[in-house]
Image 1 (spheres, helix red, strand yellow):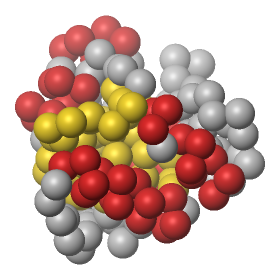
Image 2: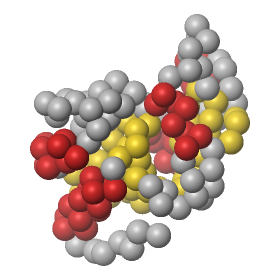
Image 3: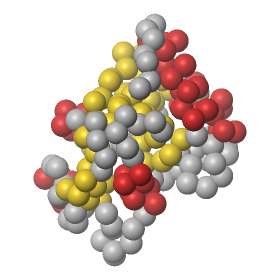
Image 4: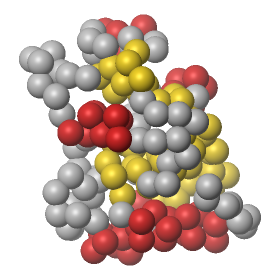
Length: 155
């Protein structure tokens, strides 16, 4: 099991409803970006934290590995006309979303210098899907459990 961080903008609500994550395989110029190709590294049972509007709003568990897919929503087709990677997930939306300021200072020293969701100063980095070290993932689970007042067993 691995931990992942996904930044979701306007696609969060439709991805949650459709129970998926989706990223293009390449941009309009044909470039493959690491934060999209990370989709191919995700395995069944991995845990993904959804960042949306400066908060963790959901924790998901993957039900399979990435597979090739057209954009799942017509709004995505206008933005990303190429094929992409899709991962099916079970979203667990938090009752009390966790603001970035409540946890980023605690995990920033655990994060890698490159390909990290947050910079060393705690600012969000541009990208979609980022691998998280185990220690950072475990700390996030603990902080979420404190707020949600329940204990979630990570598979």
